Image 1 (tube, rainbow, N blue to C red):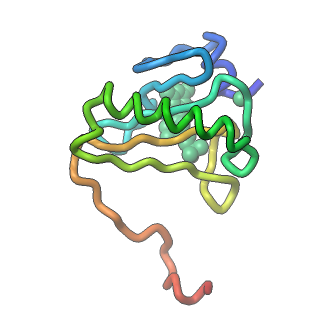
Image 2: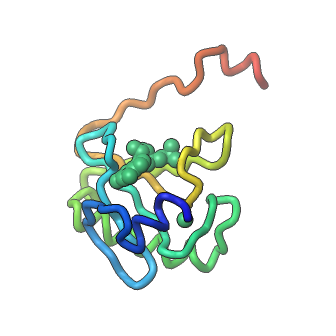
Length: 118
Ligand code: 5GP
Ligand code: ZN
C-alpha cells in the first residue's frame, strides 16, 4: 500500500485541514511555503495523467473549498501537481500542492539553459 493510502486509512498520522467522502487536505510534512497543503483523493490514483476527468471536476470543487478554509481565495495561491519522473513526483498517489501565505517567487526550475533541451 502506498504512503498516502496509509495516510487515508489512518495507519500514518496527518494534520488534516478538510475532509469529505472523497478527498483529504492536510499539511505537508516538509513545507516550502508558509501554507503548504497536500490534497489527495481517498482512492488510489497514481498520477494526474491517470485521473478520470469526472474525479477532477469533484476535486476542483474540493480544492476551491480548501482555499476558502485557508483564506487563500482572495490573496492567491499556487496549485501544483508533479506528474511522473520528469515532474519530480516522489509519492505515487495523486496529490496537489497548495502553496500560499506569502507572495511566491516564480524561479528557475532547471539548472541548464531551458532553450538547450527544446
Ligand atoms: P511530490 O514530490 O511527490 O510531488 O510530493 C510529495 C510531498 O509529500 C512532499 O512535499 C513531501 O514533503 C510530502 N510528504 C512525504 N511524506 C509525507 C508524510 O508522511 N506526511 C505528510 N504530511 N507529507 C509527506
Ligand atoms: Zn495510494
